[in-house]
Every structure is written in C-alpha cells, then in structure tokens.
Image 1 (cartoon, helix red, strand yellow):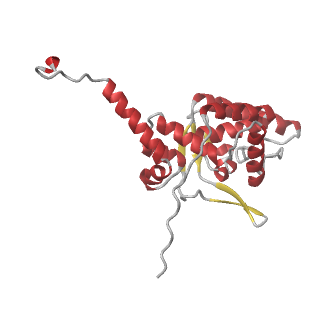
Image 2 (cartoon, rainbow, N blue to C red; image 1 turned 45 degrees about the vertical axis):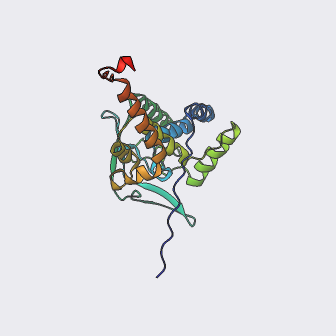
Image 3 (tube, rainbow, N blue to C red; image 1 turned 60 degrees about the horizontal axis):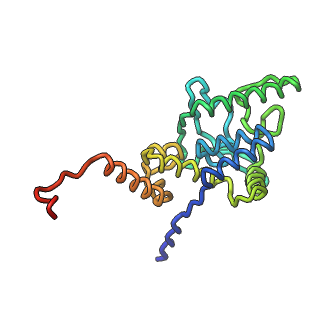
Length: 227
C-alpha cells in the first residue's frame, strides 16, 4: 500500500565558463595525464565510471569518435567492470582539439611503456598509474583529487559537475535535446535530460524566441502612425 516518495528535482550546479578554464589550467599544471582526464570529462560529459573504463580500443581517432560501453567500479574492496548505466553502447563525436589531446596522451603512454620494455596495446586503460595501464585510477581517488584541486583554487565543485557543465553548455548553445541526451547516455529520448536541465532548456528557449523576434519586422497597421 505504500507509495514510493517522489525523487527531489535535481539541482545541477555546473562551473561557469571562467571557472572551467581555471579548473583546466589547474589540472594541467598538476600533470598532463590528469589534465587530459579533466578535459575529456568536460567535453564529453562522461560519468566517472565511464571515463575510468575507457580503453584505447574504444577510440577511433581517425573517425573522431569515442565508444562508451563499459563502467569501471569499485565496491566492498573489489574492482569490476560492467555495462553502462543504461546497458547500451553509445558513440560520441570528438572535436579536433580533443583528438590532438588524446594523440599526445597516447604518445606519453607509448614512451612510458617503451621505457620499461612493455609493448603498448589497445586494451590498455587510458588513465592509470601503472606503466602497463592494466588497472585504471581508483574511482574515489579521482573524486577526491578533483575536489581538493578545486578547493585549492577557491572553487566549490565535484567531478560530476563537469558532466553538468558539458550538458548546460550544449543546451544553451542551441544543441537539440535529443543530441544532448545521446551524448550523456540518458534514456527516454531526452525526458531525463529535460527533467534535470529544465532551467537551461527554458533559457535556451527564451534565447530562441529573441533570435526569431529580432529577424522579423512587425508591419505597421493602417492609421497606426496617427496614434
């Protein structure tokens, strides 16, 4: 007889564009691998488990696409991989600058592998402290490092906020809701995206109205000049 309580409406709190630039600069100052991770989350909106589950085989750098198909999780002292939250594989297009960032990241991996006489392979994780890249960063360590980095530069943020940043920037830029939902891996054809980012969708809609209104001229009515 009991009814499930309604979930509270999400309240995303993404960093501003200025803060995003400060966060990226701070990440790259720490080290290039860490900067690459922060960059990739910011431009793709990947979940933490998704970005940690990325392997080089998931990228088509020539085709400029990324395949998201695995989550890397840790619970009760054990690490494991599973399918994505929606249990569906998705592909995300990458911009030219991100492709260059990833090519440089790959070069660093190959240099480290060569220095310890390990052959680079495409099953290697993108983000790992191990020269062999056979185990990714610890999920909690990534979240703590990001939060501590932001606190050090006076910004209150958490890693998931970069996912919100990616979504809100796309929506306010006028990208259609279905495309944004596809990049984020939201189900329901955009219903989840609309529920979470309703405020930004509304702002984008107002901008659209202003654009349309500015492109047409209201015709004058007969006798209007005499009023």
